[in-house]
Length: 81
Image (cartoon, rainbow, N blue to C red; front, side, top):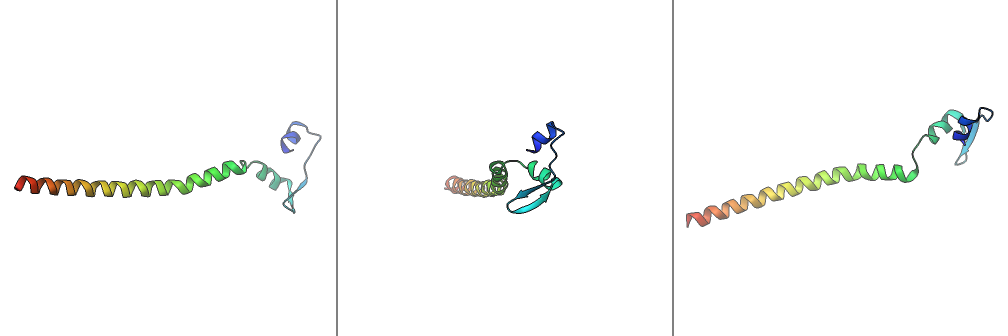
C-alpha cells in the first residue's frame, strides 16, 4: 500500500494497524522497509551458523595438528629402532 501511495500523491497514509497496535505513518514506513520474514530468518540463521563454523574449523585444526604430532612421534620411534 505504501508503494502505491508513493506513486499516487492523492493517497496519503496517516495511521495503520499492525498486530492490533495503531502506528503512525513513520512507523509504517520503517516496517514496510524491512525485508520479508523468511529473509530475516535466513540472516539470523547465518549469524548463528558463522560462529559454529569457526568453532568447528578451529577444533578440526587442533585435532589435525595433534594427529601430525602423534605421527611425528611414531616416525621418530621407528627411526630410533
